[in-house]
Length: 629
Image (tube, rainbow, N blue to C red; front, side, top):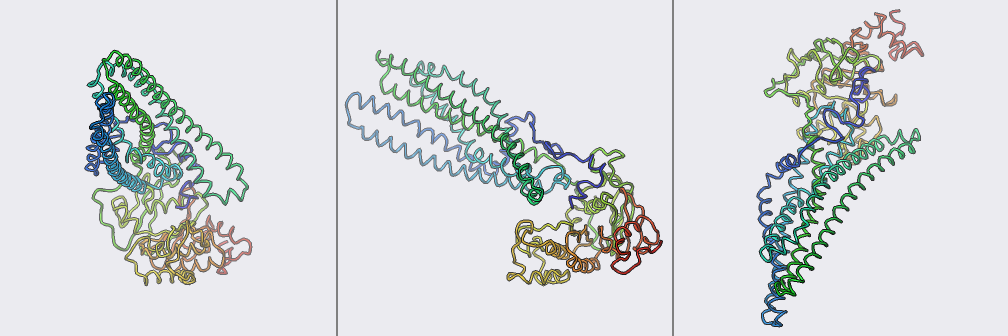
């Protein structure tokens, strides 16, 4: 609905509406997300990988094959040195070299196959995750989007999911492969020389303690990165969508200063993670170098004492080099995993947000025609814990008969748009009931119920795509003839016909290549194309010029002649033909009747009317503004 009233209908309501500042509402927060365990997050991530478990397990089966081919190479090197080079006997060395080349080739082929399979499984899992998140977000109530900045939601649905890409598509399987490789190397070294192996592994516990310590710092660093990039996205989205106001009020320097500070915070968060990453990598390298030194020191003595062969020492050094390769890889992948876990927390926090309009498991069938709408003692507040100052609507009761043209008037903040929002069930009433033919609207299927309404708002919103797509909204049952008829009734067809490609003319983002009047005419055509039972018009002529208003007013009259209509208007000239006008003040009905009846009462409506036409004492129809004085 229009941000003007759906965000706040009264000053007291504004006070009670949740802030959209540093926290995302309804339990959906930007700050530290608690003590979610890696195991719990991994289980939830696995639920998206489970449909592709066959491919995943094929990758797992290839891991020992890849490791085996890789670990055969140092052994073949040992054989070449001890059996052929040291004895100076080259007979058969060619076969060892050929075997070495074959092993290298087979390792590369198995690694390629494993990588391709894992990427396919990971990309499919990410596809499903994106679908789940987008589908879930679309089910959330309008109130959720009013509470949460768009930029931060976009971060959840884009950047956070992208950060899982490498973790799901290759990171996890690579980490498993690294663990298998490490275990195999340990077994091989213990088999070849258990004493030298134990001396070589003396630094491993120290390394494990350091990695455990770094774990906590890295998780905090990646959480901070996610928070700061969300702030960056939110500021960018707000600055771009509000660029006209920024330029009009020469606010570029202020916007740039705010962006610079947010950008600095984002840079600081990234540098923190880089610092920990570099420290961890340096520690692993240092430990690897120390271990190689220990092997050379101890192994050289063993060679001189003829307890160990040169080939075994070379193989030992080669295996230890390969031992620290997966450790370095695990350290890097660990950073990746920490980033993925931080993003997973945020994604699942969004998926766990249940801010939806409730539905019945077995809804009542919706009446097919002749809607009789009734507000029965309706109270409403935007606050989750309303008090006497936060009520936007107070004990509201009235009926809308089938085919009736009802108008709602009143000062800004009187509750007009809130009524239409409740009517379309964008919110649920706090107290009381809204009925259709005596049945509470909460008994009906939500989607079927909303399809019974069409709305034309003050700020016409058009999607990027063709005019046809914007009018039908994906309803393939609407024929071209019906489309032309609807557009002709509301005077939109001549405007569309001016384009060489007609109804296939492409509209840019938010309808930027159309005027306000053209967008509004298309909104009317779209409303008529949907064949609604009830038409909602919320300040539909507020943003157009006088000439266009005359065209649109005729379109309104034709639309209202076809079905039950509820009209909100500040320009009283647009509602004089309404069957009934309800005058609202601070969420309560203070007057109702026809235009002439309300003028004759000499009350609030007459005051509003006189204020609008005091400049000449006449309304557009020529009625004396002092009628009823």
